[in-house]
Length: 328
Image 1 (cartoon, rainbow, N blue to C red):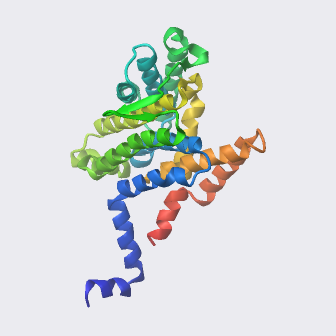
Image 2 (image 1 turned 60 degrees about the vertical axis):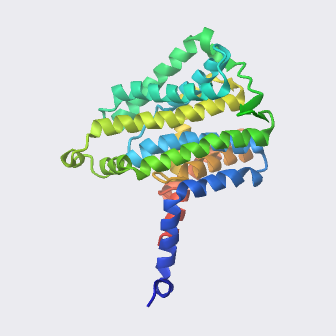
Image 3 (image 1 turned 180 degrees about the vertical axis):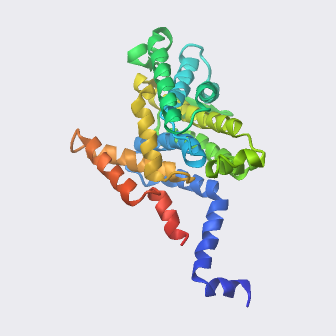
C-alpha cells in the first residue's frame, strides 16, 4: 500500500498532515492573512489597530504563552517603544526608520531593566513586581514634561511620506499606511517563528514544562527567562513605535495599567502559546469594542461577558480551540 492510500485509509492522517504543514509554514500563512486582511475589513484604520495590538500581544504571548510568566507590566515596554520613537522624531529629527529602530531597542532595554529586578521572582510575585515597576515607568514619563508632553502626550510625530529606496509612499493614505506597518509585522512574525524553531525555543518550552528539571538538563533558567523577557520587550517596543507613527501622537494612557490588562485579555481570548492567537484575540477585542461602543458607552460590560464565556467554555482560547478541533 503506497503512502497516498495509507493517508486515505486513515481519516485523521490527512488533517494531521495539513496541521504539520501549517505549523512548519506558520509565518508564511500568517503573512498571507495579514496581506489580505484589509480587503475584508470595513475600516482600514481598525485593521491597522488590530495589526499593531496583535503584534503587542505577540510580544506578551512569547513571555506568557510560551514561557509561562504572567506580566502586568507590559504597558511599560509598549509605551517606552512608542515614546522613544516619538522623541527620536520630534526632538532629534531622526528619520522614520531610525525612529522605529530606536523604539524597538528601547523596548528591549526597558525589558532588560525590569527583568533584571523581577525575573528571579515567581508566580503572582512576578506579576506584582512587573506591575509596580510599570507604574514607576508611567510616573517617570508623566513627569518628564519637556520630553513627553506630560498628561497631554507627545505630539507632532508627523510622518507624511515614507521613502523606501527612492519609492515614496503617501503615509496619510490608510491602505498604504497599513501595508507599510504590515511589512514590519510580517518581519516580526518570521523572527518569532525562527526563535520558536531554534534550540533556544526548545529551551523555552523545557523551562515552561518543568522548571525544576531544566537546570538538571544544563539549562540556565534565570538567563532563559531574562532573554525571553528582553525579546518580548523588543516585539512590544516595535509595536509601540508603529503605534506612534500610526497615531502621530503618543498619549500618556499608553503606559497605563489598563494597557497591560488589555493585552492579557487579548492573549487569553486568542489562545496562549499559539502563533496566530494574539492577532485573533486583538481582532475580537477591538472589533467588539468598535461595534458595541456604537450602541452604548458601557461596552466594557459586553466585552467582559464575552471574555468570561471564553475563559469558562474555551480555556484554550478561540484560536487554540480551533487548532484542537483541526488536530483531532
